[in-house]
Figure 1: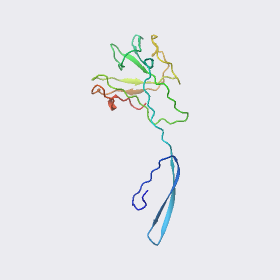
Figure 2 (figure 1 turned 180 degrees about the vertical axis):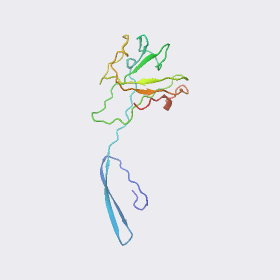
Figure 3 (figure 1 turned 90 degrees about the horizontal axis):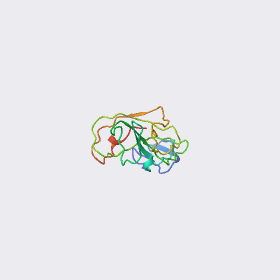
Figure 4 (figure 1 turned 90 degrees about the vertical axis):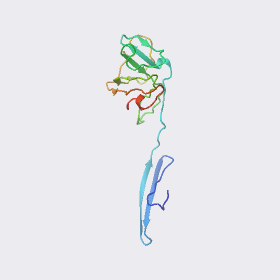
Length: 169
């Protein structure tokens, strides 16, 4: 805080309640006014990756399950399919406010063409890992709300940019 500047700024390193007082004067008269600032703690971003092969799966249109693919083909792999992702150990405390949530993919290949995806959640607090049982993805109870995503062309192998990021979930 520099009291000699016309425009000054204050910053706070820790959460808490602070009272600042602005005083102005012309050498003869002066006045002041307090202002209370409440600084809230900001949680560090929480990032989780798929932990094991049973936490990501592809289900073909016939219900056949694939848990061992080294990549996920979103939508089409010989036929349209359903893809599932499971993120374990997300300890979000009760009352926490989630301000942003998305899935970041990394391009395995250059892909051009249109795709229209609906992203839904499973209606379970701690869903089971995926299994090889036919229909293991499509048989799960899902949210009625969906986020639509039409990803743009994926530029080059290894890209993990905005084009490979889902909209806000």
